[in-house]
Image: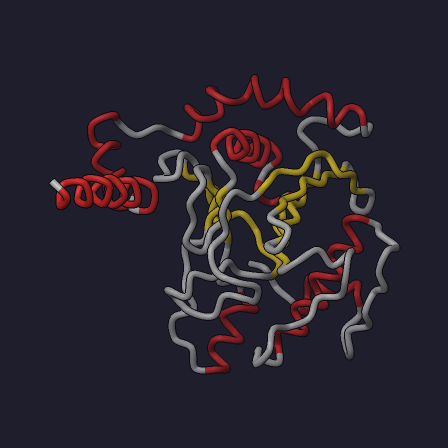
Length: 261
């Protein structure tokens, strides 16, 4: 009897863990039975509720829906993702913020496959997955050119890949936003267009305190942190923290110094 009392809760725990974190293993079987969806299917499903929820927020800022440009500011320590938008090249407005439900690892950049780290840097959305094991997802261009160059210089042959912003509340190196949030973000991002969208992932909110590289970090981490701080200042137009001078690099040349595609 005692063995059963121990075994049943343990079995339930194992099954729950497999259900939550092993979705990439069992979910393809579900898709085989239910059939795959297209991006058009997802947009048709969520377009109206997303517009009803977000268009008044855009209108209150005097912005079109969808906007001309959009930036997602993700902060790992605060577990917050902010949605900022603009109808020109410089005047951004905060539209909404979403809680990040899960982001594995610790503060600091991603360096290799399997380190469970969420990347830190300036990224683009390069794909939309309507059949993600984590509801629906948007793929980031990690590793970007900067990540690849640093990995090559340090002899890291496998810096990792397949980093997504997705639904549900479990993550291994990705940003898990929950289903309702990713439905809005997926739909709005697709309507805005991936060429007009960027994603900044920061270890913490640089408006509160300067970004400090973790101990024993590669030298380039300080450089990318400076680029993140400059991007935050550009998007948020914040005066709450000083703009660090990037030695040898003008703030206006960030995109050249740190390529994202």
